Length: 450
Image 1: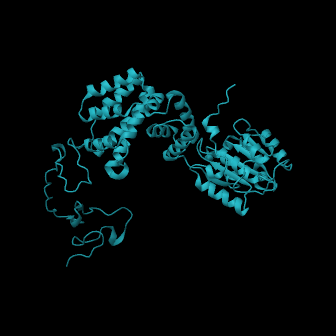
Image 2: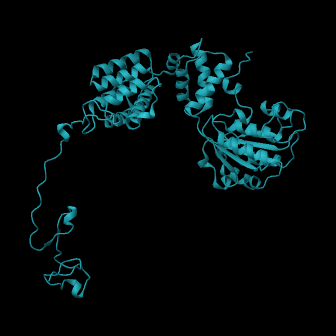
Image 3: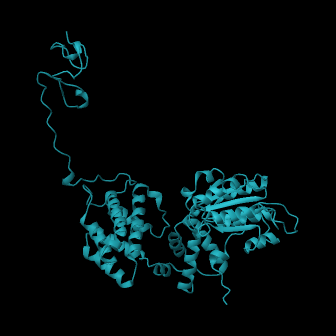
């Protein structure tokens, strides 16, 4: 029987000091534990794999830690060696109950849980109930827990976790302290992976970790699962080329080849790149995603030149396309890449959908887009760009003729057209305002000229 443990479980944090990317939650919980100002119900929200269950287990250990000598009190730094800490880490502590609301969502399940909550803890200082995916509970189950959630026994703590807080009733939200766990940044994911691989003694390339961090999409658990797969796929070490092949991603030269052919108007060159991708078995959906990402970075650099650092491996190609395309073209090609990816499942096949997206980029051009190389705005003393003939300034519009009799000119200084003098009063008016003004009295109640 294999004793291998996946990285996401092997390297799960066991104390607040090793939590990555959730400093705002760690600060609040450690301060509450230190000052012993503890709420009875907590709600952790966030996408999958950002640490909701991990933080709840660490919090349960902090509440029930007995210290290495067996005489400790609750602490923000659980020892990890006392019977309570070890039992929680191993999932066998009787006073820490994890419940999956996705499979235990009925009012009967909730009633049974609340009945057990009335009994004092058997081994720990507190009885901690962790209800995962709490938004999956039925409305009757939510109603059944409201009273206990508001005034539980002093030895009971509730920790609720959800990926969709919008589905949690406001009556439950108002009874909890809510902490929104942030998505993991690519830098956090890369840093954590780098530490793990260093400890594991596995060689790696920094670029490979960046690709994996992008694929994680804000989830540390997803990133570590991809890292496990990459270690098995690459063999001797985690390399960027191996990770790209594993994910079915096109290499950087594929994307730059597409954009260079697009800048040159070379349709045959773009189709040749697509044919090579089909031969290699690369994912066209992933290629459109990567192409949109590259266009996004080019658009950033066109407006904010410092958005890409000089040591970025893609810096040279981004600077190249910053010059080759106007901002309007980049925006249009970005939209075509997004829509092309969404339309892949409607196309006859992925190859047809991908090549049609490339042909759209060739066929359409923003109105008035420059056909010359763009000069960056940050270059001082740049030469002015001559607008194409299709967008030359229109000929001067002749001035309007003088107003004829019976027409009052209003707002002449602002260029507004003359307004005709009303020939009949509005209905319902009587007396002098109903049309008894003489010919010399101007409209709008202005005094007549003497």
